Amino acid sequence: MISGRNPRVRNPRSAAIPERWLTGLSPPVQPPSFFSVRRACHKIADMTAPGTLFRPFLRLVRITILGKEFEVPENNPLLRCFQYLPPEQVSYGRFCWNEDCQYCRVTFDLGEATPTRAAISCKLMVQNGMRINEVTAEIKYCLRTLEIGKAD
Ligand code: FES
Image (cartoon, rainbow, N blue to C red; front, side):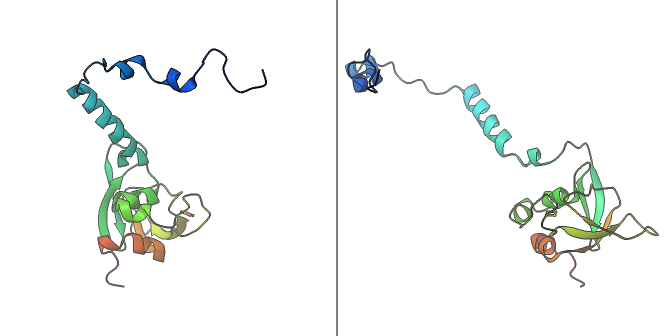
């Protein structure tokens, strides 16, 4: 058929309107039950909870950022751990999270008498006792509310 009309529906507008709307006989609207509201709230919370940002973890590990100690989730990249501390600021940082921008570069060691290494924190897995000695200006800006590196 060439024309775009459905031959079974004479008036497409009237077919879209349920009959009970026209007669005024629609049943009274039931308020949502407590359980349906709670289920909906959980769905919304699941979509927005910051927990989904992180890889599964059972405990927090202790790291030092520019001389100040913090506890962050184990089994996560260091940049994600930075995000754990002030979630909003790091989320708005100019990070690619993909090894391209290099804004997340840090130097770190794993304690006394261990070599200092440079790495990009979006790919570096956090370890207990890690000491971050240098960070980029972008990270420092994102972590500004933690008041790290005040001695610099
Ligand atoms: S966030 Fe861009 S290289 Fe790590």
